[in-house]
Length: 233
Image 1 (cartoon, rainbow, N blue to C red):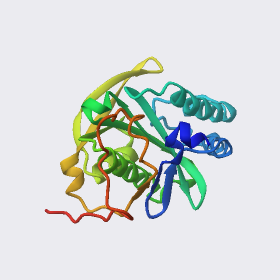
Image 2 (image 1 turned 120 degrees about the vertical axis):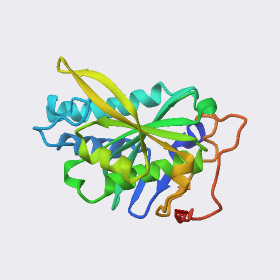
Image 3 (image 1 turned 90 degrees about the vertical axis):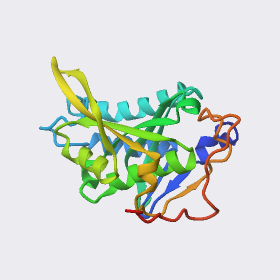
């Protein structure tokens, strides 16, 4: 079975409404269709990814090729995990988590998108919260970072809601003009101080080497659902 050679295929993260996991090929086609129908208002440009510069068929192909290329380039020292978020059994978007030298630095950076049809219900916040649980509680990360354009109110709001703190800016070029992104950082201590919904991680055993954790043990919860922590504030 494929999972014997690539144990990440058995990894699953479940929150109250969502499941995050690697997709089958048919499910990958479904989430590509979600992207083809739109990720944001065509009159806006909240991401560096040129979603609105591409016709629907090319947007879908971009999703498929990026998923394959990230898996194909994976090494324990440089990896990018693209988890598809399933709501009521159907794909609604992608939550990714990336790291370089994670076994030493214990730091991840994340990004995500969710289809227009599924926005406005708090699923984007729940997706990232589930990913953070995997990073901090499952893999023992010490910090998580995220970036968004300063005028991307939705993404900035998610970061602030989840306890991230401002961490400077980055400058990129988009359509011949400089654009600024706000960086955010969430420490393990700040994450653990918050009240959080229950999240269950399964299938992590056997993936440690792929995440660059060979010779170390992942931080795991007791069997069953990991219970939320109450704020100490």
